[in-house]
Amino acid sequence: MVWKIDWRASVSLLGTMLKYLALTMLVPLVVSLVYMEDVWVFGVSIAVVVLLGVSLERLDPDPDLGAREALLLVSLAWMAASILGTIPYLLAGLGTESTVGLQTDSLNVLVGSVVNALFESTSGFTTTGATVLGEISFERHSHALLMWRQLTQWLGGMGIIVLMIAILPEIAVNGAQLMRSEAPGPELQKLTPKIAETARALWLIYFGFTVLLVGILYGLSLAGIADQNMDLYNAVAHGFSTLPTGGFSPQSRSIAAFSAAVQWVIIPFMVVAGVNFALFWHVLRGEVRTMLDNVEFRIYTGLLAALFAVLAVLLFGGAVPETDPGGVTEGMTANALRQAAFQIGSLMNSTGFATADFAAWADGGTEAQIVLLFAMFIGGSAGSTGGGIKVIRWIVVLKAVKRELYSTARPEVVEPVRLGGNIVDEDAIRGIMAFTLLYIVLFAFAAVFIMLDSARIGVDLTVLEAISASLATIGNIGPGFGDLGPFGDYRFFSNVTKLLMVVLMWLGRLEIVPVLALFVAGVRDR
Image (tube, rainbow, N blue to C red):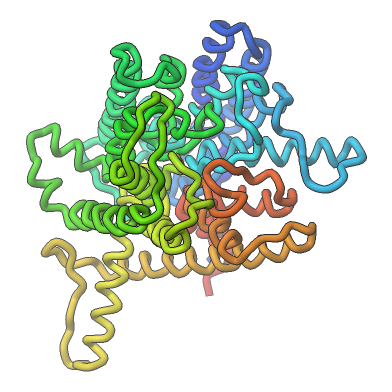
């Protein structure tokens, strides 16, 4: 039997989605009108995306999605969003030029610009937060372009598909299949009888937390508690990148550009972003015990607390009293606690914000960096906006390994894997094992490739830096170590490596399996 995919149905619905994606560009267009910068850039971008969307929509007037068509639509949607997201960068023409090698001909310069723009756009939509724009400043980049950069992360956080299911009836018909392909984590929890209502509930919670953070940040500035750098523009920009665990900032020094008060406010919101958003729906319905009894939530918060404690101890010996941008001098203990809480909250949830250059930590630096690397491997919760392997998968993997060891010693005993008192389905266990293996294999392969290709172009990359580069892209984390640190960038890599990283970011956001499943959809069953 040959499996076939009705690509016209998938591409037609993709066209419908692109029309609505174009509407989101109205946000940076309004910003461009306020600051009178790059108005034509976003006017042209909207026109191009709408025209393409209308053209694709006509391929199939009555699309019908099956399971394979749903996989194709999800994969194409994220790919198309990343590609079309490059238009404003390319039209603006700033910060996308290639910096690798001696670019002596226009073709190399053009290719380098396109690759860099694709890297930046993909990093945004996949909420990775890695950048190739170099020094971020309003002198080099317009307010509108940087706001588009922030907005791409917010759109990618809860998911483009989930948003479209919430607002488009024609897509909501096949919403369950689509959300299952896009949702981060091994399971999809249906909160309401209709999947469109579930999508709307998740997006409203996500939107509510974003508005709350923006209001607090701007309120602190108005009250004089935070430094004046946190104006309305910056409050909105960082709201757009905190809840999706994105990590982009219009400030070159990330959150280190702001006072300690701002940093303390952002920490709990990064933690919230790593929690399964379905649990907040239960809390709003008065079912607080549902969250408190959730196994993944308890282990997630326990890991955060444990890693914070270890890192704080390591930093206490080497942390130096600093003066924050607000002019308030902290003691050694307060500084160590703030730095530890922020870095763990940021990297475990794949946010990528930073308040210090952890790549340059000296006293206790190596041990501290190992703690951060471990946090990057864990990831957030299933159903959150965090990246990585996810806490729930690690729980199931460890329980399954424990069962295998027990069964080896006592083969006559049949011991199921239990989670919160419930038996985990064997198909789910196999799926989690397959994902985890694929994730580790791809991560390892990419790390080796990055190191070899960097050596080819004369870039001296350490093993730790190569590992962090691979993990930061496939885990949608953003910063790594060395020159890839929180205040560094990815410009020095070759175009080949950058394209590999684009694929890693794409695979990481869709959690590998839905994309790879497309390659076996056309294989003959034997």
